[in-house]
Image (cartoon, rainbow, N blue to C red; front, side, top):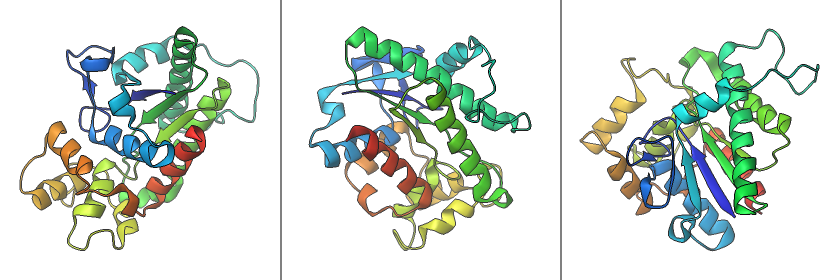
Length: 242
């Protein structure tokens, strides 16, 4: 089993150490969301993908370049977003299509039938957007994977962003009432931003390494996070790897 990651920046699924679009092995600097994936895989399969080093990374820019090369699907299909689909959900759909194609090429190159592609995107949005927009983005990503006949794609879409998952464990009453965090604004400029709250709770602005450490040492315990967007991600990942 080989894992491919693509995210938005160093503090989610990491980055290549030299700013390259594609990397694996020592050149991949994994992020805290990668550690979460690793812990779920370890619990399900009994090994650490980070220790086995069975992974690769494609940057957001690298994926954008591949997405720009996609040709529109000409036939009408119920699997596709409708003509009135929001631009941002088409973006999720097209990203998933491009990532699926890349993963299938990697599978052929490795002669490995099981390449798991984990695509991270914050859902962002305003507090008033509700759960519907998150569902639309997740479903768009799943449609994109399905359009390319790729069965092992995993949407990783925190609601509204990854800081909510971390704050579930770090807030004053850890792991209690965490679903309310999903109703917060994803705007970093809002007066009640999740990013600012995370910095306040920690007492410093965390780096990629800091966040990896607090997930890795179980200060953030993935087995105790009970939030709809997290449960959805974990359930999908467990289904794919089993």
